[in-house]
Image (cartoon, rainbow, N blue to C red; front, side, top):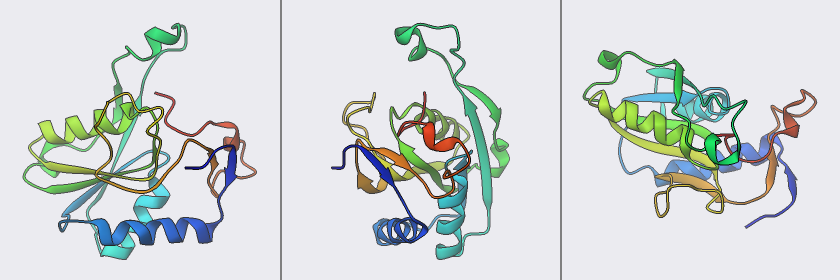
Length: 168
């Protein structure tokens, strides 16, 4: 477990991706990358396993005017999501950078499952201390942390101010 602020290099990301690869228990026929955090690790994983059917999902939890409790009660808004026919009957790897509260990736997994697919979740970092889903955790993760993670694609672009985990 890490604490504090951790700035990762591209070499660190490559090592995390390579820690995930031997964990996979099945062959996936499609990938859903959650924007924006899942784009880079998803692309790296897709390249490593030779997966070409890559889809994206964009999710928002509207709560700008909500108090802290209301923030966690908000229903997800799917801004972009693959059509059911692109998912039905397929083994789908859902990728994001981090499982913080778990709301975003869980919402995507549930929607992929309701389309008739067989989803499994994958993240670089799992934060069990923020997880809102009890014993539920990602199917695959490279590291457990409660640190403030800064990914190399966030450095010098203003994104390094975000705390570890999805804001939802």
